[in-house]
Amino acid sequence: MKRFFLGFAVVSLVLAGVVSYFADSDPDGLDHVTEQQGIAEHAQDHPLAGWPLADYAVGGDDRFTGLAGVIGVVLTLAVAGGLFWLLRKRSGVRSDTNSDVR
Amino acid sequence: MHMSDGLLNAPTSLLFVAVAVVGVGVALAKARGDLDDRTAPMAGLVAAFVFATQMLNFPVLPGVSGHLLGGALAAILVGPWVGALCVTIVLVVQSLFFADGGVTALGANVTNMALIGTAIGYLTAVALRRLATRNKGGLAAVAFVSALVNTVLASFGFVLEYAIGGQGGVAFGTVAAAVLGVHVLIGIGEGVITAVTVTAVATARPDLVYLLRGVPQKLELKA
Image (cartoon, rainbow over all chains, first blue to last red; front, top):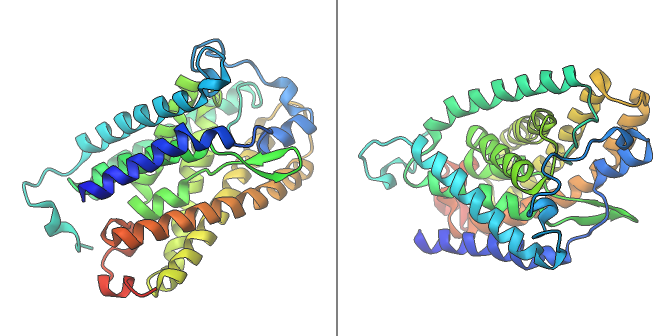
């Protein structure tokens, strides 16, 4: 079990830290449509547009997209993992006994 | 598929903040029943995986890209309630730390990707569960279809929100045709990523796939 979780975490870190350099930088479907139809003219700048990690860069430098991605994965894992760990049922029963319930 | 601030007028943005708060509140209340010492770390890892995968825009048309939304993926792996929370956390982290997706638009973005996408993705997967439990190919097919439906209907959330209170006065039909058309293509990419991911998890740890709960594990070993 530990090995699987570790592997899953490594996959996410590699995707965000390395594979992200190969992502398509064209606008996504929604941005494309809103730009084409003039809707995007109404868009306001993000209040954090000047923040160091804005747009998955570090200090506006795209060369650090991978670092921004790794920071994001760790942050998401910490927030989500922490919340789910707090929310979980604490039955005192060994976890493997619940595996077939429902 | 993250809306910036300003595309929707203020009352509409607020309306969807309220929708998102109610939806996420229900998910929080229901999620507890699906979280234990084994599934809680899995769910945290699913959220991290969705964050990572959302960075990976793939080309769908010349000059147009798309990325995974992750609702169907999360729902199949960790259930609809926890799945909706996974995608919500990703959207909040993206907006508040990476300036990706507006802040007042967060309600609408959560409604579309975390609530609509996850709910529809899950309902589709459950409707096709018999096929999903048959063998690996069936599971992959169900993951693909659920993810495709999740992408298209999440994008329809934007179309509805724009119709209620969008800026710029573009006709409903024009927005709907363009948004839904491109999201069918993005949905195919989402379907492939979801099918590959779900199949990989089911191969390594079928007991961690929510959709397969209660299925005798020997069935899952067939290729």
